[in-house]
Length: 326
Image (tube, rainbow, N blue to C red; front, side, top):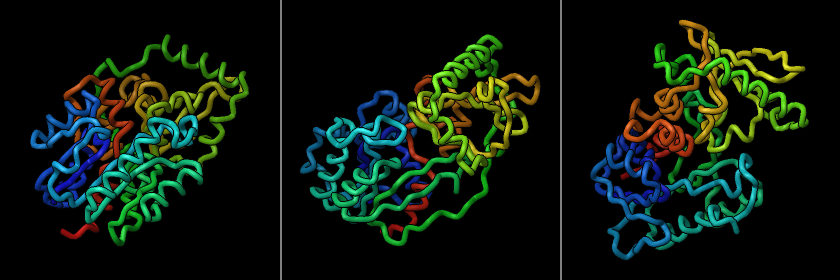
């Protein structure tokens, strides 16, 4: 089939299509981030990049069978400022609508975050299908709830694969991922300031019943959750700076949801060898998103973290695609 992927990023959609066993004749991608484009081109050199979604000439394309995309969500996500469709980033959603209405593909699929009910309703009305809410925790070691609007028939919840954090942790990593005692002390002081300010946002995460998975990876996770979480060799979480700065530990088998900055600022893994604390590696983040190991290793680690936080959980997308008929 011919595929058009809007806001393509690093082409997670292409990985999912391959994983679902779907033959791709032509894959057209709309993306403007140079780092994401570098990764996509390195893995899929045959992809055809169309550039900015706002300047695509749809008349020049062949019959498109599938239109997919995850339009920028910062304008109306619970993790963001909860703005509205007047936000330029959120307004890009209507480019997806325009593409579907112009190209009239057999199938389409849009992914987006949990959001205000009124925003959810606008997307549903524009696309004419009800969304399905799927948590990536069913197929990965990450808690990541996302809505999927699609006309692909028969999409249900994926089977729970029972994957936990221990399944994706690398046994040995280089020193560059470890934190110094000075860095840890600095983060503890930061936590104290959050606590003294009376910020209650952390409670929403601490009360989440399912700590068996990681929280969602997002671009600004470190701003939304004021406390730092440390994973030790037993994959338990230690929260610093709470309860008069005593700290405590509780089981944590799943990762928080990925954001573009989350793993540098929030989640640290305690080494089995020397009990030091470290951040998750790019490979571990790839595994949380069910992306192949080293898929993103064509750019800096900073950019790898960012695009993985902005990307899709591939196995969720592949699960949806398996219901398509050629």
